[in-house]
Length: 142
Image (cartoon, rainbow, N blue to C red):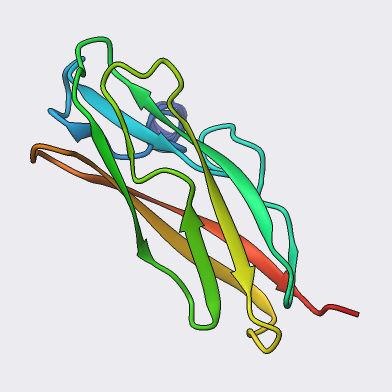
């Protein structure tokens, strides 16, 4: 019987702890936000990208109902020889569309394999930032 309780508790903890990005803004309240990147929280997985080509990926900010601030977007880290650009520097508080595009362009001699890219989102006037990481797979351009 005791094993059953432990197994059930582990499943519940696993369900609550997986696929959740950290909150920015004021965590634990409706005045917070999350970043949704490819492959996270039900988003489509990132596409493979060939050396010397470029691919674009959709991402977005999910605002809590009371989060009314601008959000500044930055590329926090990227692999060597892979250029990463965001189509927006920020998402304004009044914008209904919270989507943005991440363009990934590996150099012709970029390392083949899976790479992590980290995107940061922070309230423009200060406050707790959040970061999300997604993976892209660089494949040989034949």
